[in-house]
Length: 284
Image (cartoon, rainbow, N blue to C red; front, side):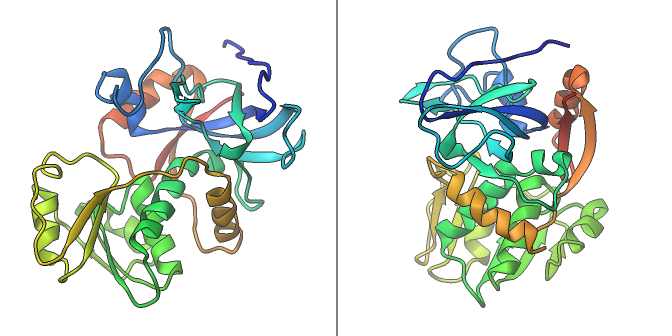
């Protein structure tokens, strides 16, 4: 076991002791070289990982919101000052800008906390970008994954009627999120063209992944499709999510836990692409 520690060099940075982290599909894709435009790796060897949950052990001079001893959760930034960063969540310590860190919901344990930042932030910001409100009808494609299961619960909290898709074996998992309807659409291709047909005139489609047909698709009947542009800071979003978790409006979905020394096995498991909920890395 290696101990990683970066000392604060910026007035806007907090140091977090990582109790746990979670595996994200982009980790493995980045290692394979698929995401160099989105998440460029500036140098090698590189330490990967996005999500962290832990306790603040030191703060920079300009930090005003966080204190040593705070239990926090965060999604590590991929860039700072326009320059790419190596994330570094798979370690015992991480340095994170204060604007990226949120106070942890008090009702989640460290493993649950670590499974949520990226997927919960993505789900909430995707729904906010669509302007989802009471009475709207929302289709979440892929409801058994981390982002999908969060998006279902958040959309329900916003008062929407929510339908999702998943394989037959994952239907019970999706039903537990209080979704209104579940369809087994496994084997279908062309998600953009299919979505165009089921959306009403003027409907909206937002994607968190670069589907092969997205950039080639021509939208019709006033339907619009966009790629999600994530907010540059996460503290405000995490504050909103903290309230949702503490009020019982969202529940964490951790399904598999690996020790840090078994990180390779965790990444291989995530690379299979059939994870229900989230894979979590436990760091001693």
